[in-house]
Length: 452
Ligand SMILES: C[S@@+](CC[C@H](N)C(=O)[O-])C[C@H]1O[C@@H](n2cnc3c(N)ncnc32)[C@H](O)[C@@H]1O
Image 1 (cartoon, rainbow, N blue to C red):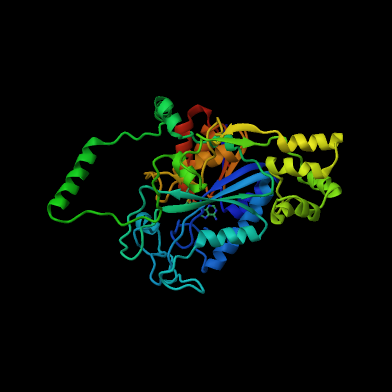
Image 2: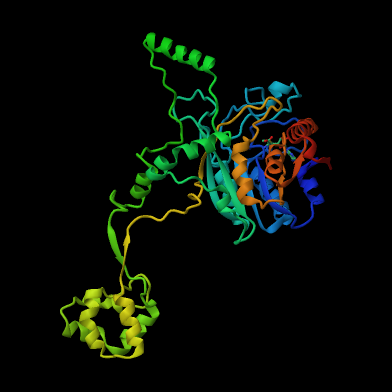
């Protein structure tokens, strides 16, 4: 497995990639107006939000060309607030200029897009997603990346922001998506009880448990105790990702589907041999009428009418009891009647439990992943856990993943570890060096980092 790094502006470098050769794109572009990466031609420093969105749409046109017909794009975007005096190009704590000492390219000191007011959440991810879907992309999922350790904010008039978005776009209606590769364990109480050791061991093996640093935990704890002793209650601002609590996943599932708690314990009767609606309606209409059944039986007319309807939503089969009453009026003892009769009266008993997929449940669209600082780069680096599912579900083994904003090379690293090839495009040569070093160190002899 190898990673190829193309150095330069992605709009130019994408032209060097052949049509229909990439399985999936996983990337995080610079967000609008947030950071200056210190190179000419960089994305994200457009004068207006409209321009930023237009540039994204143009870039996606190139991505459409290089993607295979069944290809997908996983696009990570964060939001920000309209502000008259932002850290835009300045030396605020988010500004890379602050850290690199690169020359401050004078920028406007206002980024309040047309139609918005200072303080408005700009809804940039949503606006980008809408523009792309209007441009022909199939917008298939809005994944919430929930950060349990968000950047602290000193705000007092809104919750602290603790999430970003990852949009899943498909080039065509039918596309490659391996749901089985990213299933999550069933967490019904019984499986939990029976398999606790199994799941826990699994997690440890997958490196999912962080070992806490006891010393720093003690220090933090002391700080909290001191604050309480001073009479202040240390409380963090409420974050903007809220989880409601149910006793178990099962309970939550039932609640959401409006089911009773005793589901799974009741016997229900199911008619497994029912005829099709078309066959039944044709059959009954030929042999009797609403009028006849209304006049000659005690069954309510409103009920009878449903048996004669051609539309799916208004139609209903007669119950076993009603069928016993009306079948005499049908007055037909042919082979056709026998089939319909058996279909309407054959009943199997089942428990009303919800069948679970033995491979696990489908991955949901809220992913909790902690951000991890990376010393080598001055910008937000993808946590590997965040993009692993994108690559597993979006790219078959042996396929090719593309990141047009390669940065420190996380996409290449994860792709290679999962047995996929990668192509990274990066404008800033300093970051290319970081990526090469990182890929070389992590992948050792097996990696093939190729400059393009
Ligand atoms: C948010 S960072 C990507 C970080 C990456 N996901 C990682 O894990 O390291 C965005 C990167 O895009 C690069 N970049 C900005 N404009 C670019 C352009 N027009 N072409 C190629 N790369 C660009 C920046 O230099 C920066 O490294």
